[in-house]
Length: 77
Image: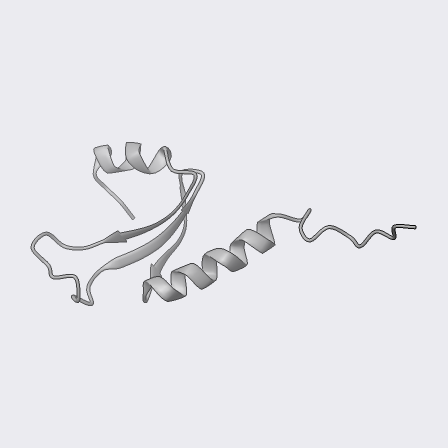
């Protein structure tokens, strides 16, 4: 969870995002990073292992949170 006030304000502005938080001075390959999914300013899932997994989870959340999709099949005559 983000604790910095400035980061919290930025987080509230996001509609849908995958955020990656690393320690200051850490390399991009460092395994101590936090990957999370933010939807409408709320941290929905944190502690994801990698960005590929975060993308897959976000796709699943998109389907789960949108009950109007897929639309029911209609018959056209």
